[in-house]
Figure 1 (cartoon, rainbow, N blue to C red):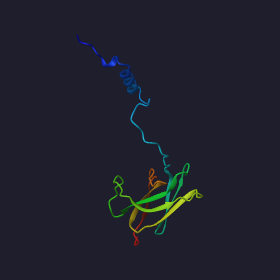
Figure 2: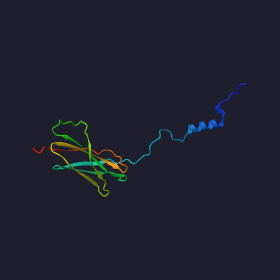
Figure 3: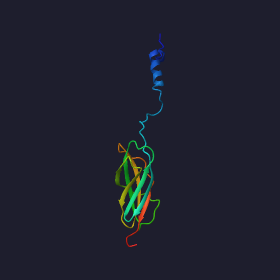
Figure 4: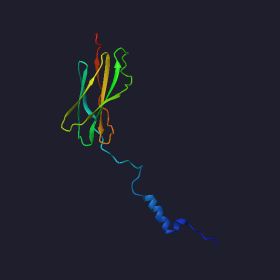
Length: 146
């Protein structure tokens, strides 16, 4: 005589299958914990005074978790053909620590003649992670003999 044994007829097997089906109740891939997103720098502006560029900007929203800013510059020669669609090679030129009392922040840079300089600023949080880049501003300084 053959005994017909189905493993699903056992109560403990049913319980295990039901637990596997229900699980923890959360369906989908696991997600990393969210961290606060840094606000984009607002209204980056540049002014030129001789061979000096003064960058100024403000910060929107809360400053909690914000350590400071990183300033980047891309430099092109005026003698090079104008290429507005060409990608810019930005290099880090400085860091600025956040002053909690200041509404507007400034950074000063010295530029040479016969060049176009494009600037961008990124916020940095307390862990050192960078936020989104600001708008880009460009300044031009003609050659000294012009």
